[in-house]
Length: 483
Image (cartoon, rainbow, N blue to C red; front, side, top):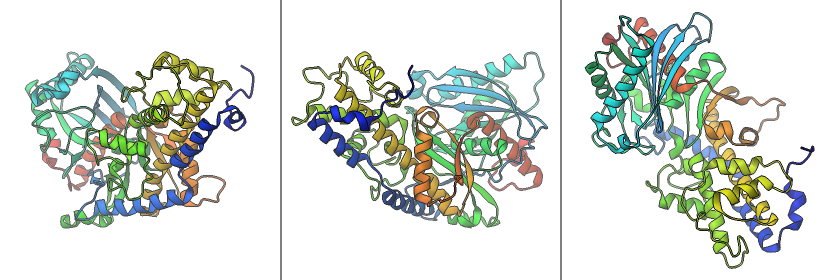
């Protein structure tokens, strides 16, 4: 491949007809988020974070997790970890050795059957317990097992008054099982484990974002924030108990740390500051839960392809615009038929003539695109991807401003962070604009996180046992049963 073949739009837009050129300009206006707007969003974000910690609560749940210390990196022991995701179930055995910040992991993945996601509660927990039993019996064949401590990554919104319990607020990720919402999931799962004679104690119930924070801090002590930029978006960070008015009744030492799982996909559900386009309004209106997860719907990987699809359908239906003329757009009309990987592929097309993008449109949508149409699609993908990255920076910046953190590492995970081209650079540029950095080196840096739902869950189980030994049993429901 010859050098300098990456498509550069500034030079190629000369070939674009006036109607499409006008649309590109309009889309740039619609999806652009300037520095002033970023700062306005961040300031409102800080207010919503604080409101979430107040006695009255707010739109952002700001759930205390009862993870009350960063790891030192010297935690030791062998722990089970279970990650119950929307598609797969992962069971891990994690060994934390004497070496600082090191770990060994053995893991197996099991498919989460679709019928279970809308079945009954007993069937779900029986299946999960079966997977754990299979894993333990395979890896500890003919061994006499003593009590094993398990960190359970349960990444659904849950209220936690204790680290070893969690009341499901609502199902997400396609689950809709009666009899679980409003109930503590730990006794249900422990009953299924006990039925199989497994000596396993659920020592910590965690969210994947909290796990990302703690796993990353275990290997990199400069980590102070954990973020997920994936199908959805979220962050966790360590606050002080004195800054959490809704815990004041517990009379905790105000200097004690407390990890907060923000669940900030719900930021600005009232639509006060986010720069909504007509397409964002359609996505919200047609979603299973209109009026919820406003921030997530503008930044989460689940929605980026859908925003792109809606824009193209609207352009095709606009009589003043000539796009995909004389072709059926039936495939394009199917909701959620394009995911963020479609946009990633467009942005990654290295050829000036956008031949890979043309192939993609033909194979996926049976559409033959002209060069100007490809230019518009490329620019639209860039605009949607850039907006998501810039808005995502507002959440990180808000946590930094709220806590007075001037520099730190952010452990980040999720498919958008890992796979979407230029996400990191765009996010870093937005952080620079919001926080007015003038230094050569960025004070806040996003790094790929460690395995939050596996290693993070194990480290949190270790931290919980350490707390019990030290006599700090705040937020532990059953400290006596842990030994």
